[in-house]
Length: 286
Length: 277
Image 1 (cartoon, rainbow over the protein chains, first blue to last red):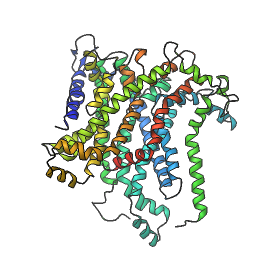
Image 2: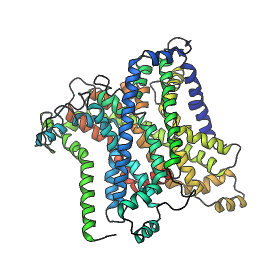
Image 3: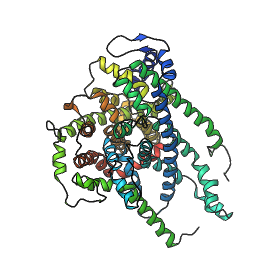
Image 4: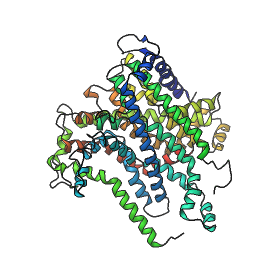
């Protein structure tokens, strides 16, 4: 059977690990000894005692809350600016996509660390304008913002998806709206946004899932600090599992993450009924 | 709507300014990689005298190994990833896109679901599994998943692509006595080659940047990838920023070159898959 490579991979590397992870989350296991069944002790400890859990969860929520809408807004604006038949559009598109191409790499994390350092480039430029610099990364008030900025900078693939969506909106809609005397703002809210809402939804769902798992930037740039201000959930989980070798505890954390992501995705899907417009369901918008 | 020349030039001007703003960190990066350490804290974009030594010294930073060694390691791993990813995606996508079998719809929705599954849920048991098989600190845990459909996204991409190929070709070949394997090898495979290039490039770039898996499974310096070598560089007590930025810049070159070689392909690849959800 042609799909068997995937099927084997799914069973061995996904389904079985999922089941095992669920089991492990009720045990204490350090790789060296046998796992010991502890019931719901891990979960009880996470919710009742572990202050780091609450901290990392709130940091991650804050990160998602800012970086997902920022990225969506930003990439939509750029995509609309690029959605013209003009010379040089491919060049701009490449320029805007470029940060996404290299953005997830450790190299860019190194770049960010040096640019936002206390005597880094950003502060030098601010000094020109007479603005006193801060240690962007060493200050707990601004450290998370630098990571959000890095995430937003990589808006390329979201933009490309928006761009493809914009190209599929029939031009006649705009033309007939013009005939009816609609202005640019009205056209945007009555035509562009509704027609683009399925693409927006797609980007939103994947954006939330993806940014909940941000790891490299926090791991390299800030190491979760200062005072845990960037201690992202994925980093917390990684350290529990592979620094402290608390495999059971980490599995419980992973299941909580799964529950949160699933819940948010479900909320997204439920809410989508009220704002996502599918052409096949109704008449013309506006 | 006004399509006067003026608005067109304003648009170009805005887009150019915005592109420069976006690329500014990259431009600074190139300049900074040639700077002396003392010069790095100056607000200039370009060094007074370019320090090409940053590249030579950065290349040999660890003494024992050069970056050449780390590049060779990473490329070796990538060879496995790309071959595995492309072959598996092609075969599996053919199965989903063309053949009828029981529960096809069910398995396909499972495939889509795995794309949304946070990797954290499976990573601990996977690590335990590879640890039991004594395969931690080897490339096996990094490469093997690619041979078993690890790239669900790519399979999805190819399925969409294969569904776009007219079935008449298959029918004609079937009448000529071709088996399902024959149809795959002689008809579908050649037709999906352009999409396979996209899959190959994506696989290369994503696994080049997949720092999490590398940091998890590789522990001896001898086997380090470029990304891990950079991390070692960052964790030094006295960081030579110029050298670090120089090597970081080199480390993104392979992806950038690949991207430009297949740019049109690439951006459209994301666009079409993104949409047909």
